[in-house]
Length: 160
Image (cartoon, rainbow, N blue to C red; front, side, top):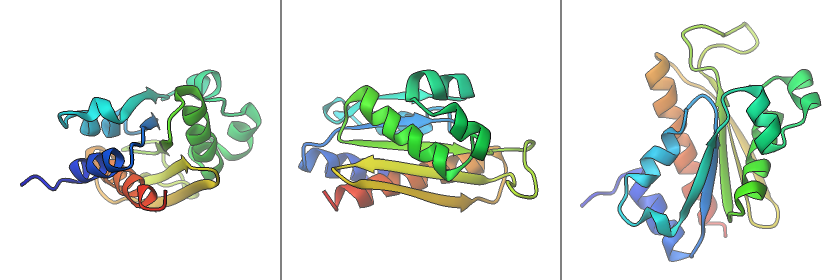
């Protein structure tokens, strides 16, 4: 029996008739890819935005220019605004966002390679952002970020 994270997320969403969307930057759509690998996922997956550039974050997800200037694209504040913006745009029950530095370049002392913020917006008042610093290469950072995002969706569904 397949008990992968994406299967468990799908079962949880379906059991409560909830819908989900994503706003992904460093993962490039990996969360949506994994969710839509599951047969029947059209019952709960609405869509996703790959917002790799700041222009897309602003234009589609309503991330404020001031947020990007003050905190950067890889920040708790940007992850929050991405999740809220995706949920408003795609009109879902839950929205997950991911922004980070997958590497191998782009890291700094304050924001090292592997730094990722994962946000979620759900219900009337759920807005959570998790900070992670993943080890490994680009693929490992993307995979760990997608796993954490799926786990955060699963944990959030249990609160709704």
